[in-house]
Length: 317
Figure 1: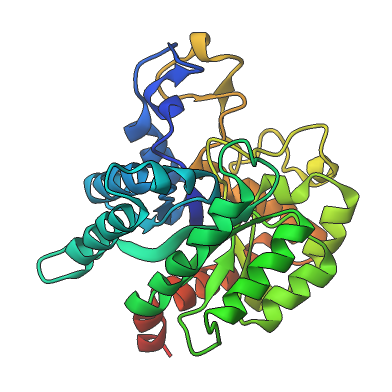
Figure 2 (figure 1 turned 180 degrees about the vertical axis):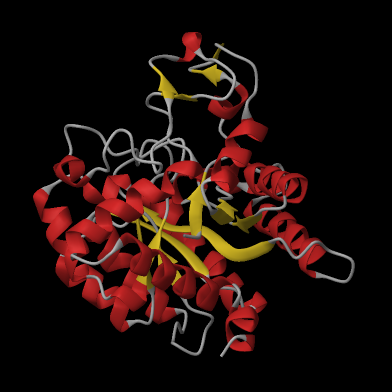
């Protein structure tokens, strides 16, 4: 089986051995990437959530032969207003960053605009007003570069506002598509996103409750993408998805130590999700949808290339 993990936070300090500001073990990022490859993960996207993290994501993508997004997470939009030269200058730096990568001599590692969207759960990071103010200019980068959107939407009210603003800026299926990442919304919200021509990204956070599982079961297979959102969103024994986890001895599982300070070379860390575990997400979703893991993985691979590497997908038709 081959897998694609469309959302990883490999810029997170945990992959350098630092947890809550304390160094617990040496950096094992290279081992994390290799572990993913060993388990059939052929494409990995690193998410850019601010100007600096978008730059770091690109550096890592180049170093490890991965791909990345470039954007400003809704909870980071307040950074734009704090820029010494103003929000427009901050946005221009992001544009320059994308131009450099996509232009002549660039690595072409940036394959999506994001994360962008709305998050009304964590307004202490960025107030609603700042998120809404900067959203249109960020969404329009998708049209400017003909790159798919990597959307973040948290709460039903943010869903409603995000759909409205997308329509106001002229969103249509003529744009380059997109994915609603880490989807935790309702059946009606999922159907509205699909009606707009978008894909639905599913990770462990999408599989916490029985209601979540009911929604995931209804996602059309040709609109499904999979992600780990590593190091976050790992499925746990308290989630509704626990009934669908692979056997502990399955080759899809990653062997882990119980806590960071017990880290050993070649092992993962309990509570730290990593790209190698995308097969676990695939297994859970396949069981929910009553299809084989192999068929689901191949369909999701096709969906992923269609969205992020459309020329590659067309060449194989």
